[in-house]
Image 1 (tube, rainbow, N blue to C red):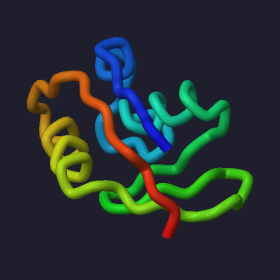
Image 2: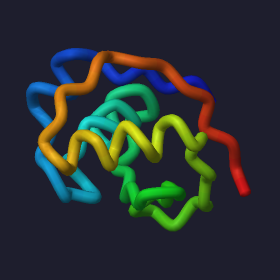
Image 3: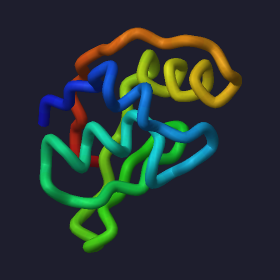
Length: 80
């Protein structure tokens, strides 16, 4: 499943928020489902499964949470 994190997601996202970080906002926009994002995995509020995040996405989440500027990016989210 391809996900695109836009500049708007980054600008609208909240640090340390599993439901409103840029990645969660992008997943919600691209899938229409509310996501709960951890450092390494994603689940959906409806309980429809777990997905691994690529390592570089996990790094982007950590950089964002630590206050660093991140650029828009795309990634593939794969079910566990």
